[in-house]
Length: 201
Length: 135
Image (cartoon, rainbow over all chains, first blue to last red; front, side, top):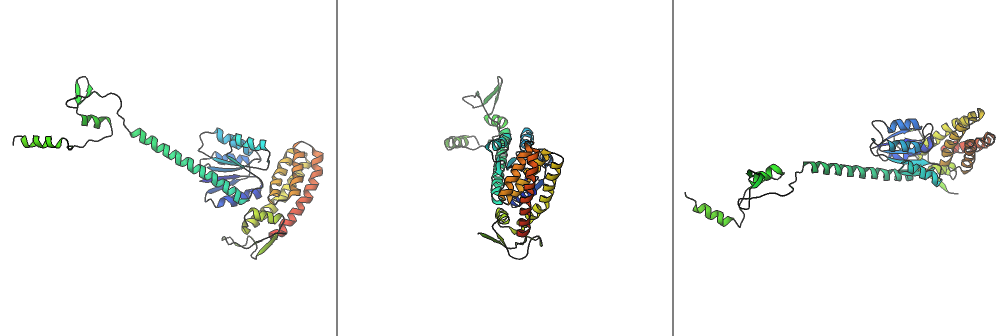
């Protein structure tokens, strides 16, 4: 996974880098909102972004809005870093599309823990998306027999149209993913055996 | 007075922090060291980042005040407040916060008065960080 850290203040930026280095993710750090947006919309866009609320050019809240508006991007987990602890500011950031926020000054362990929550969420989303895709693919390959099948009550052939009756086995093979193998069930076995023995040699 | 000890942690990058065991007493450096979980290498790197950035940031505030650019003053003060907060420098955070608010409201006269106060508190923090960084 890739992480973007955007902060125009080098101490917080360094602290964030140190906190996230242990995640093993690729980390990109930038010092203003323009550079952050370029990173967010690049082909190698990050999956986790730590964005300072106030930065030159484009602030963190606007970056959240842009990232959420651009629905084509893959899922991204955004943590907004803010020194403004006012509830209204926090609510603004979350409403704009941030998933979490962390107030400045933060410590290394706290940011790492919050980032790990984000990484777990992303891993879960990815796993669910994979499962859904697998299920959709499986569903697409399944043929289902539905509706009323007209069947001869004596020979068990299926009527395909008004003039053609098809053997059950070939009908099933043509209209489902089932394959038919042949055997003799215990109930039929004595009768079948009798028929074999009675057959002219 | 609480005292935090740290010793050199080898990460394959020699020479970026003191080789000897160091002792940081409570204060701005102790606060930062605690913030980085006692990692001496990161601590020294962040101190260096602050010592490089602070004079530039203060210069940018003074220059913006000289040309009555309150928007830049507010933005630079906000960023500097974040750096000061990492050291738990409460007095500096308070005056820089006042400067940011004065500039954001366009009160140039108050901003100029507060700038001198910011310089004084920032100077003290810079001295403390320079001293504390070397253990």
